[in-house]
Image 1 (cartoon, rainbow, N blue to C red):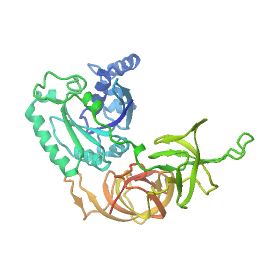
Image 2: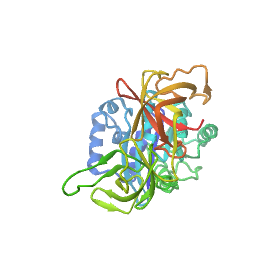
Image 3: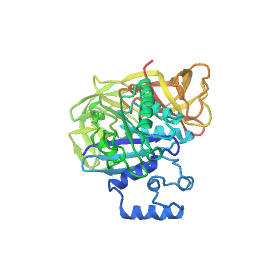
Image 4: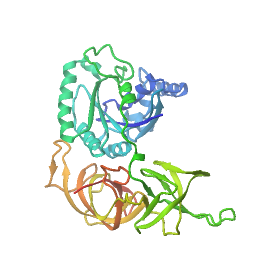
Length: 415
């Protein structure tokens, strides 16, 4: 069955968690004990009705404050498709969590409060969706019940967002008027929006065309571990274990090991105790080669003739995630797939003004939640693809060398 990953985003109190709760409830994807627990929690918090937002707001602080802090993942299925939902926070200080939730998504549902229209966080999350090259953006104009389901309000928001979408070059944008609290146009069509002729949210999610998967991209196998049991049962066994980042790998394929550029041939593919003739991303496998070659963690196995780019100078669109500003010239740990290397930011070209979506060249101090175009220098060359071509091998994280905290997430772009 097909799988669609999507994330929710928007400003504070736009109703993201309530929407997910309503989607799960109306699609009958909640177990009875879960519903009973939510009913009991709603009563303890003094809610007059069942608060469906509590299905995703699992942290104590989230329930007490009525906000989302961490990324909450939920799984459900309909007869047509499986879904993985990432419910992300709306507060500006948790924007980095939205980056986390959207990094693996196919689509983003961006909620807009019908009373307030497009806000700063709407633009910020839309820009992140554009950066992460999500295939679809669904603008869910929520709380339509509080504006008497006004078509004029809906049309005005659609027009304003369409200008933003054009500027950000968002691929495909859909607009739906909803009330997450009451369920209008979430799973069931609402009689209170006779002027809306589009689909309900669930029907749209079930029918969005899925793009070519990562298994159709050039093969990339970052090596995580070398398996050498040296036991009586396996005296000569040697295999290179990792998760296929993209593509397909078959026994008999000619491969190149990076960075050494050594060539060999695949003689066996194992998945746990099962021998395979072919593996596809994102399977985790152990690969045996015909030759005794020098392969270790951080190396990458690719098909010969499909080699990625190799360089120690990279251009990034960087989302800064730490309260300490980015320090150009300071050494950081750069983690790319399974490889780690020391690197430093040579220059900050510009920052993105989230309100105007313009490039700022005057203030190049990169603070938490800023998005900047930077130039990175690594101590040794990395083997990478552009993010536009491969979201796994085209991304990296930056780690503070002193505290080992993740402080930045970067997308590798062309100059």
